[in-house]
Image (cartoon, rainbow, N blue to C red; front, side, top):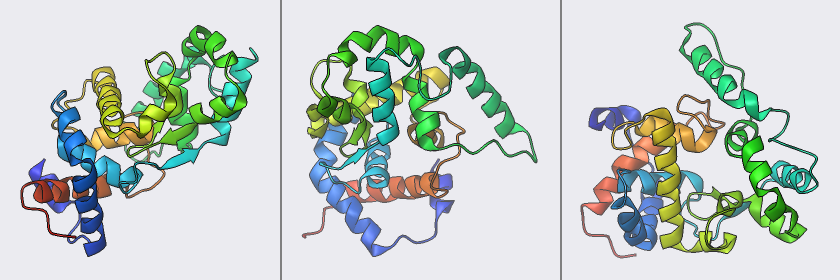
Amino acid sequence: MEEEMAEASPVSLPGERRVLERIYARCGGSILEAGALSRVPSEFLGALTANESAGAPGAARFEPAVFRHLQAVAAGQCAAYGSIRAADIDREVEEALDADDRPGEQPQARSRADEFHARFLTAGFCENNRPAIAAFEDDHLRQLATSWGCTQIMGYHMIGRPGTVKDLLSLSFHYRLAVDLLAQFAADYSLDPGVECEELFRCWNTGRPYGKTYDPGYVENGMRRMRLYREIAQQPLRAT
């Protein structure tokens, strides 16, 4: 992994290092605490934060398509995300993985929303949680349809969990849930979080370890930022 990260990109911009230093200063304690509860390296969480929010704890991005889907679930009009039937999700993912492995063939490009959210908003999830979703006003559904905080966790991950969506803005809570979600990816795809970091970046961005990221540099940036974050954590932080 050391050699892979060293070769990922030659030189980082000074601004990128400053972002990672800011993340370490603001979030390093919570990252270290969450990392200690899992096999996810602290530098992975630091790099993931840089990729997703540049270290802005209050970052939020509303996803209109997810909002419309949750409204349809609440009205009993939809059983799974978009046009993807829940019974076909696992098979579709396996077919996509096979396509990725076939030389000379390109898998069908799909948006992050369609692929990533379909992984979680399955028919079983929607059916089990429809009464709770139906009880929410539109304002709350908007919160569920928004990605929040340092690693941009979707609000709907709070359905069935203790706490509220706004807890995702708490650094300690946010990173604990992030490592839980990463552990779920690792378990589902038999990944070693301490070694297969490229695959984890792809999981976080696309929902599967060999997915095509919307930003072609997402994984490369993440691997480079892991190395920088580790360097920063190992030396005294410069005064800002």
